[in-house]
Image 1 (cartoon, rainbow, N blue to C red):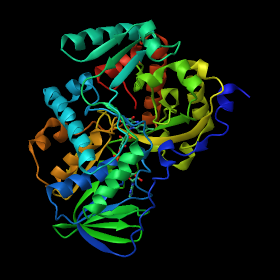
Image 2 (cartoon, rainbow, N blue to C red; image 1 turned 90 degrees about the horizontal axis):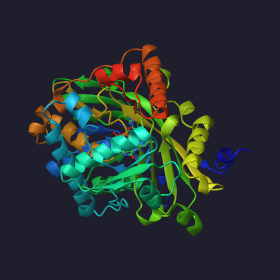
Image 3 (cartoon, helix red, strand yellow; image 1 turned 30 degrees about the vertical axis):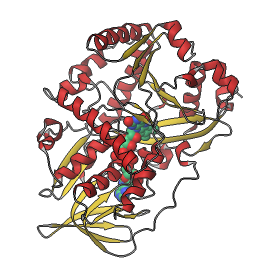
Length: 469
Ligand SMILES: Cc1cc2nc3c(=O)[nH]c(=O)nc-3n(C[C@H](O)[C@H](O)[C@H](O)COP(=O)(O)OP(=O)(O)OC[C@H]3O[C@@H](n4cnc5c(N)ncnc54)[C@H](O)[C@@H]3O)c2cc1C
């Protein structure tokens, strides 16, 4: 058997982060009708942060949160744990979609992370945060030039950045594929254990009096008179003044929510804990960089506290026809084999290492490559979805916008284009599937061609659409 397939032979299909004795029991499902002021649908970061911030703003708010399976079962308990302050996926994307708002969004993003970390302190949530910054590695020569130019620009702007040439980068983390590296040390970017973060938030909102029903799916919502809403759920009907949809990549019966995103599957692996000799062969554990390669179809990888490597992204990322989110998309051997193959290309010295866990999750991608908030039914139903692969930090801000749109201490933020501008709709099938797949193949080609973008990508760039996850 080939090495990269053999390495998967004992892996179990389960997110590493869920495989913990700290995982709480699911709370009882809804059984019978209920009533509240604010109903939150979805027990991921967006839903949990929304409940927490609404309670902090209005302590007597009567809130119910429903989750169709269990808290942290969505992307929030399955991600890489990279905590990043970006709200709108980089400067170019921000300037294109929200001209004139880049500086404000940058400040809001930094403040959001500071407040997020302060909240963890306040509620005694140990999410295993490590302030390691963000390190981009170049794996082709086009990327070396690009990263060097970025370094010079950031340095000139007074940012705390470190440049590694090939030898220096390989001394930090030893991979023969690394040609250079750029370490962003500014701010509070780092890594967390995402499930511990969800579970900590769950405990905090329960302590604040939020009622949580797990294994309770929302079917649909309807208005009830002029001021109330009726939510038809598994187990009963919930009447409320307001509803926040925090369902992200999952199917939502409300067209306005559903149209904002397409679900894109991302796959991940975790190794068994590395031995001292294996760690020494990489050297990574000394600085514990949060790494990703500066490529279109990039990998993101980090070290856990028990010295495993988690490895995700790359060529395995997929959009399935007609917004496929069923179980048939989740555990596909070819995707994990591809990931495993790419892992051993990066770390050939780890030959013989086994993967203990493999898992997948749904990224909600919007046409603007960042969150899409919205509100309808005269301010009674709001949503915040579509974080496009950068939601560990941004969901707290998305949740804040969601509750402000519902009237919980609204600020001038909800007047920004970032909130009011409607996203471009996704084209219908089969053009959608063909378009996403064509783009992905063009991105792979560009990566193999020193980052040089072909005609299709240049066309999409003109419309600022040349990106998939
Ligand atoms: C594999 C992977 C890796 C990622 N890595 C990173 C990373 O390193 N850094 C980063 O910043 N971002 C990353 N992301 C993105 C990030 O995880 C998401 O943006 C974020 O978790 C979204 O949170 P959410 O609460 O909006 O959605 P989710 O966590 O998906 O939560 C939505 C919840 O709604 C529930 N739900 C859906 N429909 C219903 C219904 N009808 N009734 C009741 N409940 C319902 C779902 O079960 C789910 O629990 C990654 C995503 C994936 C999938």
